[in-house]
Length: 134
Image 1 (spheres, rainbow, N blue to C red):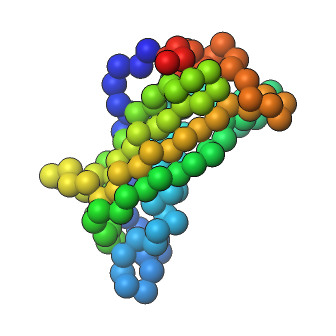
Image 2: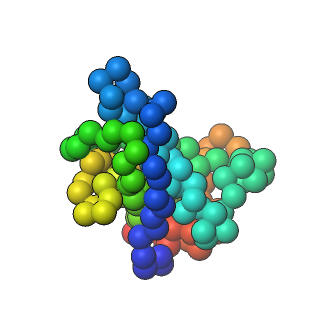
């Protein structure tokens, strides 16, 4: 079972902001996805290679609580902590934290399902990457 939370740092870019000068809501989803993909790389999971093998890890639900607006130039730390829930499903508990004091800007729960050739499945690699089913 994985014991630590993964995180990656990002600098907010001006083109990610709307007319109000704050990060567009959809961009937060990109930040969260980036952290999940970097987590995958850190444990030897290649999302594209899996897809080529007929194994798809698909986002089935995204729950976000927006707590603090982000503005250009801000440094943030985006976390990704996988939690296995059942045989075919797992969550990523995620946060976007403003640096340096790590104030929460977003709290998210992302539900991911494993699909093999169009059907729910649990290849053995899931245990290695996300721990055994709860």
